[in-house]
Image (tube, rainbow, N blue to C red; front, side, top):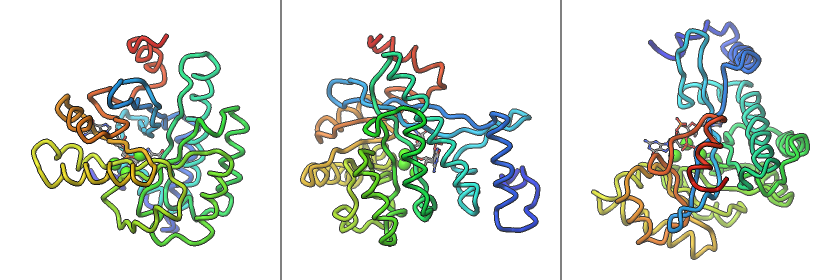
Length: 271
Ligand code: C2E
Ligand code: CA
Ligand code: CA
Ligand code: CA
C-alpha cells in the first residue's frame, strides 16, 4: 500500500487537504511524540532527549515520519506539524524540569520549509513562553540541506533564535549538500553524525575515517559531535576512541513514549 493511498486525493494538489488531515490527527491525538535519550559517550550521563513524531491512524496503522513529514512538507501541513511537535516537546521538557525529573534539553527537528516562514521566530519564542521552558532547554535540529543555499532571512531567523538562547544543531551531518562555509554562517553548537556512517564505521574504514574526521572538525570549530544510530557496544568503543562527545541510539534506548521517560530515568539512577 502506498502511503499516499492512505489519504483521499487532494483536490487542490497543493497539499492543503493534507493540512486538514494533519489538523484532525492532532485533534484526535493520532499524532504523538516519542523521546529518545542522548548520553555522554564516556560517562553515560544523560544529556538530553530528541523528540520524534509518530502517527497512529484510527485503524492502528503506524505511519513513520519518513512518510508523513515529506508529505507535509509539500504544503502548509508542515507548519501545523512543526508547531505541534515543538509545543508538545517543550511542554514535556518543562514538566521534566518542574518535577525535578530531569533538567536536560529537548531536541526538536525543524523542517527546511519552516525556515521559509517569516513567523518562525515569533512562533518558537511564543511556544517557549507558553510552556515556561527556558530557551537553553530547547535545541532545534536543522539538516544541512535546509541550510544550504538558505536566504539571508532564514539565516537571520537562526541568529535571532540563537540570540534568544535557543540552541542549534546541524543534523544528518555528512549526508547533505554541505558547504563547510555554512558552519561559519550559522550559529550551531553541535554536529550530528548521520547513522549511516556510525553504523558502517566498525566494518568500513572509509566510514570510520569520516566519523573520526567529523569529530575532529567539530572540535577544531569548538563544536560538540553527536553520533546517532548507536546500536552496539563496539560502536560506542569506536566513538570513545574518536573522542566523540554524545551518543544516541538503540544501544542506550529506543525512543520512549512520554510515560516511559520516568522509568528510563529511574533505571539510570537519576530519580
Ligand atoms: P533523524 O532526525 O535523523 O532521526 C533519527 C532517526 O533514527 C529516528 O527515526 C530514530 O528513531 C532512528 N534511530 C534512533 N536510534 C537508532 C538506532 O540505534 N538504529 C536505527 N536503525 N535507527 C535509530 P524516525 O523516528 O523514524 O525519524 C525519521 C526522521 O523523520 C528523522 O530523522 C527526522 O528527520 C524526521 N522527523 C521525525 N520527527 C519529526 C518532526 O517532528 N518534525 C520534522 N520536521 N521531522 C521529523
Ligand atoms: Ca534529528
Ligand atoms: Ca539522521
Ligand atoms: Ca533526518
